Image 1 (cartoon, rainbow, N blue to C red):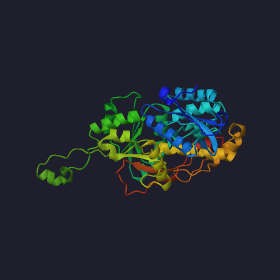
Image 2: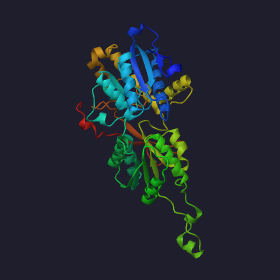
Image 3: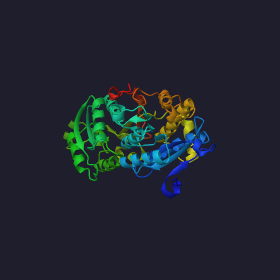
Image 4: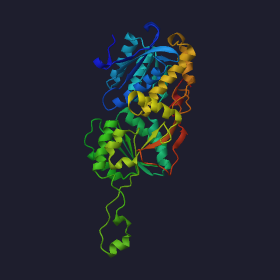
Length: 410
């Protein structure tokens, strides 16, 4: 049974032409509440914008979009995906914000012989041994931003780093990815409990290690809590004082006190830049850095046009998640156009059309690698207003994928 969004948060967008039986159902299982709700809403609205711009079609094929919140849990994502397949007859599913939810929804979809498109953060395991012919990742591999962060730290000639990570799989993968890219010395690996509220022990560990870079392999909620306490501990107030500028001999001659000790922190790496982290960080926000598949500062004409249309429709500026939702819809449109709307009745043809990715991506040239993960060009992002004039925007060009060799599709 279908409900309106005002009743239970289930949103329907129906094609304008043709009978319901002729429309293709696409399920969007995403996070619509909680700390990641804004990102999920942007993915959904970006996808819906592409549908509305084709008057209820994708690739000329009438579609019906059924969207529902995943409760922010893997079980919720799997259950909603399964229900959409069974009761709504969804043939294509998408929408997850985080890698664990993408994995759960993708397993439910591919087990039922449906197609799944991960629009944003995608699980590392699905890039390797768990890759599947009916699974495609449009965004980025979950550990990739941290590997790119390690390369950025190398480029900035940082010699030491401390990693703060949760004990789960995501934290472990992120920590390993940074270590894989970083040529310097990791001076501390500091565990953070999933329910941490007091970070005094972690701050003490950082003070003892005195790293030049801090890597936060943490969910946004934990990262925000840590950054607030990092700021309160004075880690952002390290500008040289007048005493720092006085030569030691003059300080001794005039019996001046020693200047306060300065921490050597030069960078704080996070998985993605967002307003919540920037607001939480306070003074240390100027040291925040993240790797992104969208080029900062110099948006393309395609992105500017998309942004204007998105803002006109929804009354807010789009984030990268909105762009990824839009790109996901345009990818589906390209495949539907190629197969004349056939999906399950021409699985091989639809899969091949997705892999060809014949659409104009908002981030420029787009292609899939053999494991069905998008080959991405990575850039450094910083807090708005922080202009790294001394460094080029591109990190690596096309990033490498250490997991791809384990994928039997290649």
